[in-house]
Image 1 (cartoon, helix red, strand yellow):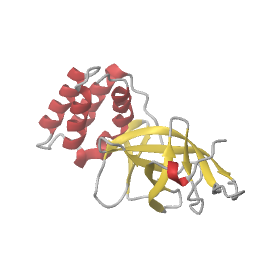
Image 2: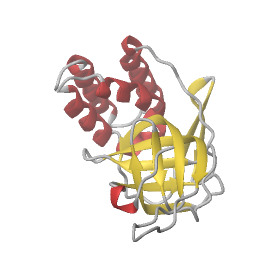
Image 3: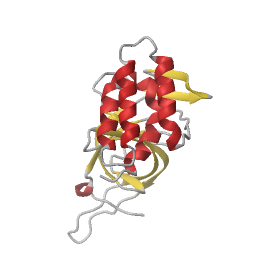
Image 4: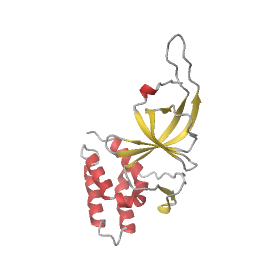
Amino acid sequence: MRKRSSSLMNDTVTILCNNGSKHENIPASVDGESIIIDEVTIPISMGDRIERKLPSGLVESLKVTDVHLQKGLGRSRGRRGIPDFYEIAYEREGVQKHSVQPGTVHVNVKDSPQARVNLNSTDHSTNVINWQPEDVFLEIREILRESLADSEELDLLLERVDDMERSKGTGSFIGAYQEFIAAAAAHMTVIAPAIPALTTMLTSTGG
């Protein structure tokens, strides 16, 4: 197991526990395999969520799949000791636009993308929709037309979807994605099921 000191905690995360508690501005070290946190007084368990704000302004959501409390090492012969720390395994759930609005929105999917929405709840259950890349934009358009049929924003959002589809696989995609997320900020509960698929396109885009 790896051991990290506080000086190597280069990330700052928010921990959303299953019991409804929220812990903000926690120093952490996040890499492709695990998360290291030395705030061992926080009761982290499987199923909790860890959020990390990316340099782009988007917020990455990470679901805890396993957690181990590792014992540190005390001081010896003038050397600094290593405190106890958590080593946390995780899986990425996607990213979304950072919001300063109060409250938490959790979207739970069952049978269809719009089946069940919990507002300001502590329900951390997750359902995954495995959309193929060629289906994502078609599905987003259908969701928008069904959910926002009487909204003046519908045409604008459909234009943003067209922009994403045209720029898919190019360096322009991240800009089109960010414009779509910004335009759809008031309707995140509607488009949330599509975010993981769009995020996959972000990571595979060269530029």
